[in-house]
Image 1 (cartoon, rainbow, N blue to C red):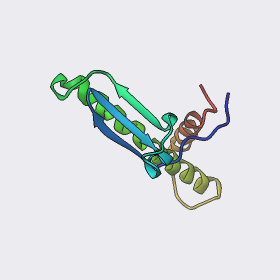
Image 2 (cartoon, rainbow, N blue to C red; image 1 turned 90 degrees about the horizontal axis):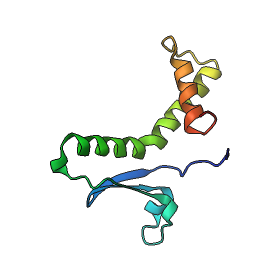
Image 3 (cartoon, helix red, strand yellow; image 1 turned 90 degrees about the vertical axis):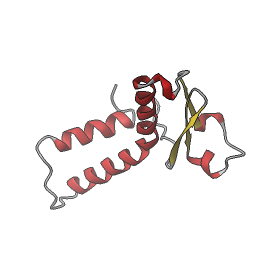
Amino acid sequence: MSDATHTPGEWRMSEIEGGFLITMGTALKRPHNCETHHLIEMDFSLYPEDGEQYDEAKANARLMASAPYGLEIAKELLDLARSGGSFVYPPGMLQKLERYVAKATGRTA
């Protein structure tokens, strides 16, 4: 398993013909000099008239594009909890945050 880090945010989702494109990190900073590993094309041959399938694929693309922000927030909340901060988490929340960070960083299956 690799210890590589993810491409840092900002990530953006845009609609393309028949699908969606997620553009990441440095590809946004240098749009005319981006490498293919900074792009994710979700081409399901879906169009708005496909209804629920299209809406679901679009929601999935938005979720993927927001992933770096979710990970950043989860790490900050865990750091706060581990530092003895006075914030009170609901029961089970720390375990959920730990599982999310572990999964997002490749430390679990």
